[in-house]
Amino acid sequence: MLLHGTGIMAAPVSPPDQKEILRTLTLAQYWIKKGDYNRAITYLDFEGMGEIVMAGYWDKMSQKQKNEIITFMKNLIREKFPTITQRLKFLQFGAITENGNQAMCETLAVLDRTTENKDEKIHVGLVKRGSEWKAVEIYILREGFLAGLNEDMVKPILKRGGTIQEALDAVRLVFQGQ
Image (tube, rainbow, N blue to C red; front, side, top):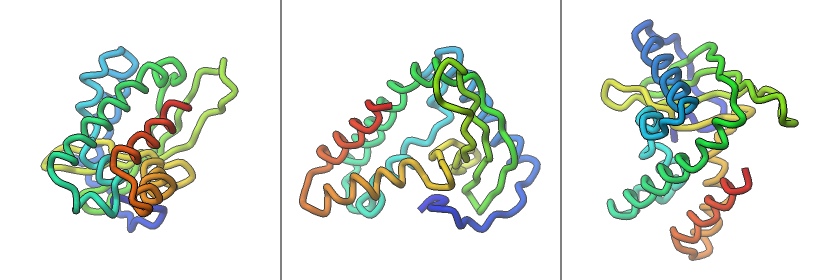
């Protein structure tokens, strides 16, 4: 799975890819801060997010189910943008490493000082589809947020015979608490 866990075999990033990755991240941040969420989401890979959240089940799903999950992820992220806009002052992008069509960018998330939260060191996972780099995962302490939702919520629900809708409802509850 995409950059799963901490052990990607990282290689130097070519200057054109580095430029494109920074462009993608900078523009996503810009449009989020401007409140133009429709433009911001064009720099995110929702199919990749769906693959991560539904890992182990994605390949068994119908195209209709995949499309539902992609739409679900899009709507969920769009709902969270106002909260992100309120709390995030800016992202400071650092070193980028690459493994084929996947990359990781060290990032410092600088948050509004009116909250108890401190600045967060995170990694943004990106995937290259065609010629475009798009953000697909956030890593906190090198653990993927969406991959964690898969392990902690989606897999247990589906293993016990629950429905995809039940799994997505559980994922939505996690996002509502943030």
